Length: 153
Image 1 (cartoon, helix red, strand yellow):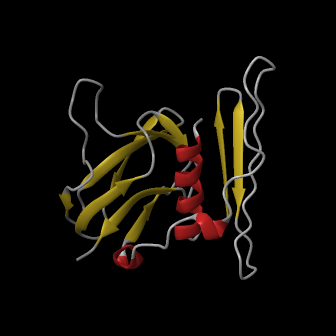
Image 2 (image 1 turned 45 degrees about the horizontal axis):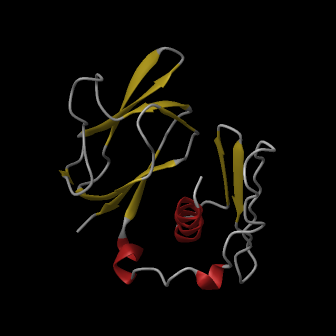
Image 3 (image 1 turned 180 degrees about the horizontal axis):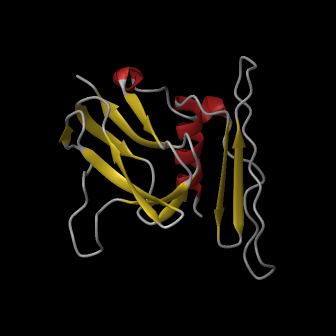
């Protein structure tokens, strides 16, 4: 995982209400924790095979991350209500339910989360414009994981 992806994850944790994020990608594990103290504490740990070059010892400090976009403060989160696997489209050969920049309305299907072989449609609870999609297609999600950031304007 490259350093720009790590920076994106750090920004995601800083800009959200989550206190901890752990990402496991093949043989790399990244864990980011935010504490209630005035300054955010960020931890980075990587486990790589011996043949790989060593990873940086720590993510950039919180002060190195650019200031948050003030417009972003009004964005609302759409979270996963359940644990499962997220699918952005109803089938592999069909377009996604929504993409970044799409206008959504209450009750509109945004994605599907498969849990115990049951396909659960996740619907918008409010209208707005999709600003960011934080989960890739066909990836596992935890309950309360942030899936979408929406500008309700």
